[in-house]
Image 1: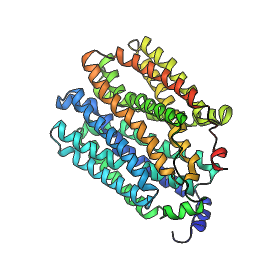
Image 2: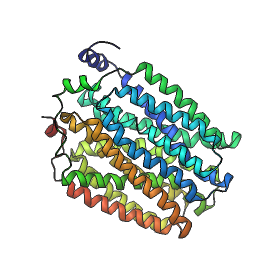
Image 3: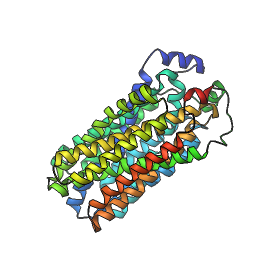
Length: 408
């Protein structure tokens, strides 16, 4: 796709191909990122490794992913975004292919930490390209569609993993995801337009100074994003193990139950976007309401956590859905508001980095707490975290968070 930026934008406005390409790419990124968490209970059963040892793998991924977001965000505003995404997905796929060769927890943790760093090179450039290549009125729908692609990727992991493990063992999950991820990376390479950041910044008002963005309200939002990441990924990582241990289900059944979370997240994206458009038009206020709803749900989870497996899955799913809605508001929508700064990718990387700071801390923390005290303390911590997120978002919502205010 050669030609100037105006011709490219006109071409893409006549087709949804760019949205589908980005959705498929993000789908593949989730295949190659969430598969370890999906089968962690089965790996524990087959290898005898402790929860804390296996949690280091997921924690390492979250830490490197969060740190890598800062680098990826910075680079995305300065070099070809298309190349960053390709390099990230291809390298992540290779890490998946190498995972079955790791015979010790420390090697698994090291390789999965490297995988997290490569995974970080996808989201900030994708947000930047969507902000530019998709018309403003279609951006919210486009970013919701891409996020849903990631959720569908997680659903496929949770649905296919039990089948693959039953026939070939847990190592086959990494081989399958790695091969598919590699194929999608080359699809992206050949189909994504080569839009350079210098062209982007010249088309949209030119670059302005990023100083002054880290206001008190923005710092509050970053803290809320940390809490959101801790709740979302803490639940998605450990819910199958919780269900297996609390209700003594078969390991494969507990993994299969994990498919409910990402499946429902596609619905939660739509509900959150509808609530935002209908009643708030302020993503931070909308996030406060979602945190409040999550707080009530975690109270119910604390009370009824050992009553019924289906009820527990429903409550876990609701909390996860609320967190996905908050992620859509604060991590997917807000970065596009700063288009005048010429630093959309940088800001996106900074916000997404905060998500995985929370994810990394809570994932290892939960494994350690459960090994020592059980699940009751974990659900109480989740409840307090949701309440704190609600209060922080209410305080931070004083800023007039509207895209018109930032781009006028």
